[in-house]
Length: 218
Image (cartoon, rainbow, N blue to C red):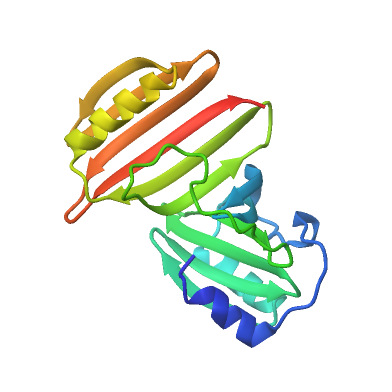
């Protein structure tokens, strides 16, 4: 979500307190809804996400939500999505939309602002280079496995970061299962018993981006 959207929502709608539930999220009748994420912390904030498909125009869905929410919405865009957001007490509801070939697809995002994020730094417990800047950190605990996806930036070169992750992960007892390049990106796959960690190292114009995707039994 755009960084400016949340403070603006707080100013427009104010806050009180009630439990966030998808039971209270209005669903357009043409939508076919399916789960994407639940029991998830994104940047230390609780988050639940469902996806949807609907054989109607994006404008029809937008009209439904504007009417349902009495036009008390903030619009924004995070590619590839256009977004409509509203704050119902402490419950932030966002509809993300994209239209193509007569079908509108998107996501319904629910976040409870009454739950204060914990104060630990993003990426706590993740193996990070000493100059890492963590952009996003998502922890998923739904189902039989615990997953985590962390995106960070570093001024170090892809080659140096690749050596760092190989040496540090193997020193911690992880087996390097795969090590290959895909375009300009380097991919490292580590395993420790049932636990799996994928490290994707991607050059960018001014920094190197690192995407760490891990999963392990709960």
